[in-house]
Amino acid sequence: MVKSGIIFLLSLIVLSGCGASTPADTVPSASPTPGTQTSAPGTQSPAPPSPGQDESNEQPGGGDNEAGDEGDGSLGEAEGGRVTPEAVPVDTDPHSVTVMVNKEYGLPEDYAPTDLVYPDVRFTFSEKIEKRMLRQEAADALEVLFAAAEQDGIYLAGVSAYRSHSTQAALFKRYVDRDGEEKAKTYSAVPGHSEHETGLAIDVTSSDGSCAVQDCFGGTPEALWLAEHAHEHGFIIRYPEGKEHITGYQYEPWHLRYVGIELATELQANDWTLEEYYGVVPVSN
Ligand SMILES: [Zn+2]
Image 1: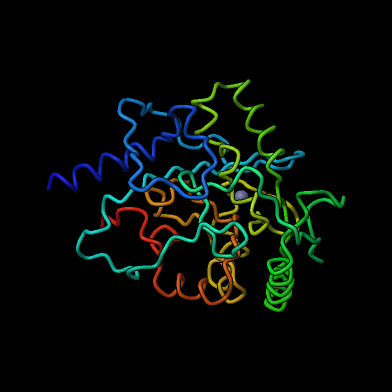
Image 2: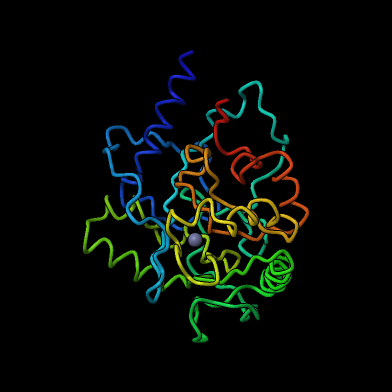
């Protein structure tokens, strides 16, 4: 009882965009501290849940988003009823396609993918710039995904993919200068904690570019197709609807994360997020 009360409270904090915490949490950590306290007592300010979250990227650098916070911790791990696989160690290897990156788990500060390429798919812009890149394996898979979608009459376009650590840092700083750190964290990821820095994530939209990185993308034929088929090509909808309290992010039907076909299929079959798979959050129901 008490425990579930605590979990509930934590969920509220997370949903409120709690990112607000001390600047210390920006520490790039490849290895998170076990049992990190998510509670940040007293920090939860009723932050507006979604101001333009996520990568706004239409502009250079795109906003980023993903502010997930995840409160994780190991609080609920031992909870009965947990149906995620036991003993799956959290993958913190930045080179791995199954690496965990969220508000708690960050990339090493000096990490940069070494196999970035330009996937041969449609984007909402024509320049060959950083945000058009993905790691080779993810790029290959994306080309297959786009082709499969077209077979079904679904025409997608990439909006924003890779983002370097320095780009994320500049972006985050811009938001902090504008809104203050506490607020910035509610809609932008601290440098080192955006999945876009892995070279394995991409925001997509419909080929006409409408609703790019906006809530109105949800429910479109493109979004529905992705929800049903992305896993067949190794991608997952990283921030699904209804899992906000687990991922720490609002529903982002456009944010795809490559994890490989095997894991993507397992996650899809069990309706798990990466957090649930690795058991790093209390699964409260
Ligand atoms: Zn994204």
